[in-house]
Length: 38
Image (cartoon, rainbow, N blue to C red; front, side, top):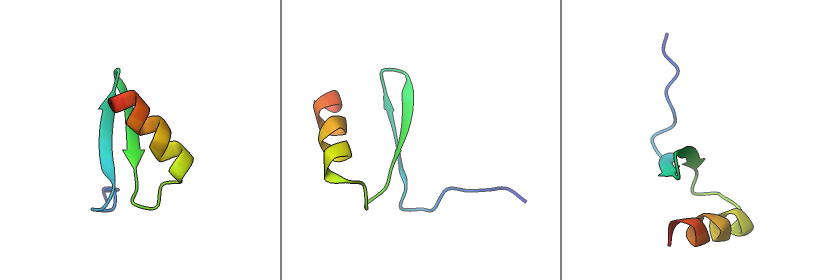
């Protein structure tokens, strides 16, 4: 049986790193991701 990520997970590739971001991600982590992607 294959293990699949929940549909709501979003995979973000930043600088070659893969980050799995969930809707319930903490604000501080979200801020870090936003600084990295913008």
